[in-house]
Amino acid sequence: YAHQARDLRPDGHPLTVVAHRGASEDAPEHTLAAYRKAIEDGADALECDVRLTADGHLVCVHDRRVNRTSNGRGAVSTLELADLAALDFGSWKGAATDREAPDLDATSVLTLERLLELVADAGRRVELAVETKHPTRWAGQVEERLLALLGRFGLAAPPPDEPSRVRVMSFSARSLHRVRAAAPALPTVYLMQFVSPRHRDGRLPTGIRIAGPSIRIIRKDPDYVARLHRAGNQVHVWTVNDPADVELCARVGVDAVITNRPKQVLSQLGRP
Ligand code: G3P
Ligand code: CA
Image (tube, rainbow, N blue to C red):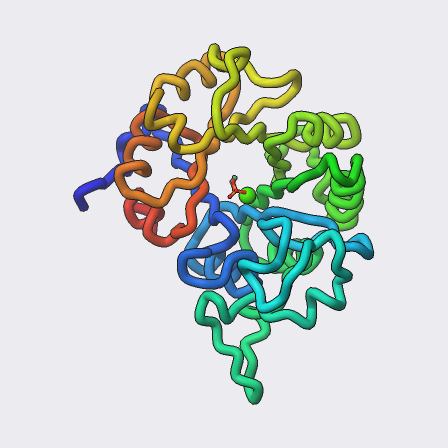
């Protein structure tokens, strides 16, 4: 394979492969079908974005509005779960919407609760990386609901001798600090579109131990990974779809790649 990357990671640890919005190249993003496919494909972890509906449910939707990924219109925050349940979140991506035999897994809105059930029933260890979206609007409610739900699944307080199955990611340090205050044992990932001058040396906001830089940052400055590691942080990079980017991430020792195509990335890494 032109970009075989199996033995490129310097310390020999396998690169964690995280399915971005599920196996979202093959199935409609953030649907049960996309996450089932990612688990079948062998992904180590699943990534999902969460938003709060008007009636207080956490649903897996990326955009502020439902317009791009469903046949409806409007902001998630102004719609109730029942409104979202009436929409089709799959046909924009070609999912079957035959009235006789609708493929509900590929067309229904997905609640975080249902996704947690899927992870619990996966039959093997599958990690979950949950991203809080626009948390400031809700002044802590997204984090509060998230931690309550994780608590119900026994995932909010991992035992000290076991790696956590869940991590919380955000572009907002404030959101992550709220999570840390309420659930200190949950790992948090500080997402970055750009590197601010105060983080250039590899340090992160207080208490956050995982950096989540865009692949563009790593392409421009591959040594940033070593600086983050020297400062004691892990590095989870998004969104890594191109084989040349997978190779780059493996070579510079990235800890996790977040990708729309887990199957192809695992195969490039020499993992079945
Ligand atoms: O995994 C992080 C990545 O998903 C952040 O960007 O816009 O896809 O949520 P976005
Ligand atoms: Ca995301």
